[in-house]
Length: 192
Image (tube, rainbow, N blue to C red):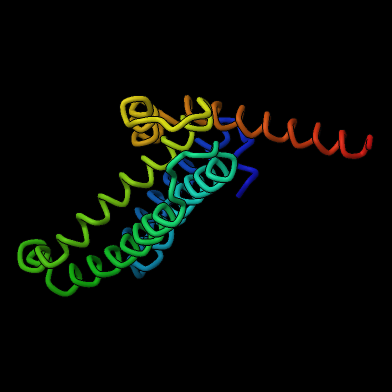
């Protein structure tokens, strides 16, 4: 997934939102044809995996080049990303199977049991976006930053389709600079 770090913003936008659009089209087609809903789940989950892959690639690689003394915890980031993906799959399967069996009464009767898990999923989504935003601004400024400094980047990432046009060029610039720096170091080592 590291290719996505150097991709243009329009490429990332097309890949992720294109799969969302395809997922919606497949879901509509499945509903019209009366096919099993598991195909609908798979079609919609592809875009979620791609978006999570973008967040993971950016977050992990920014964590790798972060300045010393920054308080970025990759383990918690991976935990929240994994939980969010697993919970969304579970929620899709559970809601579709219960809606098929009980109709809309599921929403009233059993939804309260999912509330703690859903709240944790919301916290996880915010933590994922916060980690990437903080890592991006930390690497750009080369110092630990409080929320007030990276809150704009947080909001851009949270509203993905629009924010990617502004955030991806920043990510791209950081990793292009990193590649040039690594090439310069390799050239210096070869000169020795």
